[in-house]
Amino acid sequence: MATSACMRSMMAGRAFAMGTLRPSTQKIVASKFTSTRFASTYFTPAHEYVTVDGNIGTCGITDFAQSALGDIVYVDLPEVGDEFEKGDSFGSVESVKAASDVYAPVSGTVVEVNETLSDEPETVNAKAETDAWFIKIELSSP
Image 1 (cartoon, rainbow, N blue to C red):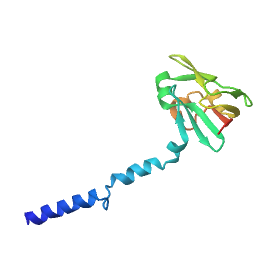
Image 2: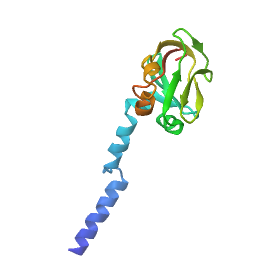
Image 3: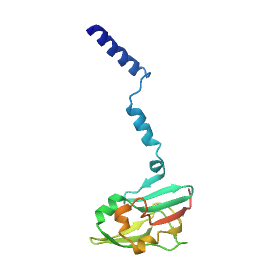
Image 4: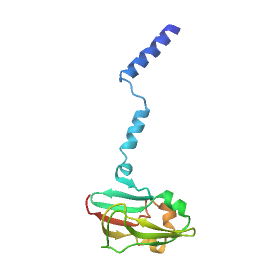
């Protein structure tokens, strides 16, 4: 009995090494890479993000950034039609701890501004990377 159990184990090992068996984690890893969120959202070292959909980029600050700032009390945003180059400051965020500029992660023209943040800046603390986006920008070179 011990020999046959050992033999089955060795055969399974060979089958795995030859690629006929795949570990179940391979499917999990593969499903992470097919997520649309990760495939179209890009992050800057300064903790801004842009989610690209066609030639429109939705920009805001990351959850990490809002956490570091603390309670957000004011958000200053540009006007529709304003043009920015990648790296330009397009607005600012003020919290009980500090004020910080927000930089454009891409170049383009502002096509929409999240007006909700003017009345409810605390939304950034609750939903930084979803409902609390700052601007939508038409990419100048998608």
